Image (cartoon, rainbow, N blue to C red; front, side, top):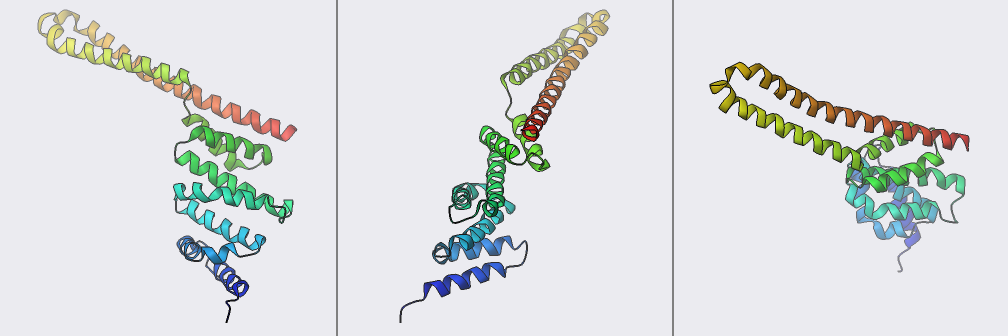
Amino acid sequence: MPTDYSVLSSSVYIAFRSIPKKGWNEVIKLYETKSVQVALLPTPKRLDVLHMYVESLHEIKDYLKLQEVVGELIMLSLSDEIPVDVGRPYYEDALFWKADASLNLMSYKESTNILQQLIRLNPRERMYARKLVRATYNDKPNYVRKFKAVAVVLFFLSAAVILLEIMIVKPFYGMHTASVEWLRNMLFLSALGTVASVELFHWLNCELKVKRLIQSALDS
């Protein structure tokens, strides 16, 4: 007797929908053992199941595997068989999970590009803005690296002054100890100030750029 694949596929969909909320590992296990039946589901149901699977991968932080399958979810959400208003939430979720996975895998430029696209789609979603600030902050521009290099030089100079103070100034030129201590402290504080200042400036710059992007999206 031939197998009724439509019945099997329907039973698989019911099995997915019966999994308790936040049963991430159950969803993943069922999807990976029933992938053939899932592929035979009608497009709307396959979209729903794939959405559950990608969400579960995101929740358990399996970002590498998520990156392998999220493209299919994006394509399904844009399918001609799915009405635009129905597919859009799936599309946004897929893009966000992809952006967050890229962020956690330190692909900051990819994450930034996707999050900018999401903000243009939905500028009122605060999570997109927070993630975009984080992505752009971690993608350090050249000026941040240059200022940090200067700070490293200042730290080394401070260490050199400490060595000089211990080995030469205190034993032989005690009258200059206060001046050397002042120089040492100034070098150290200058290094700390350089790092703190450039990081703060970079963070504020990221915040400002994201706010401008949101305002532009709201105005358009």
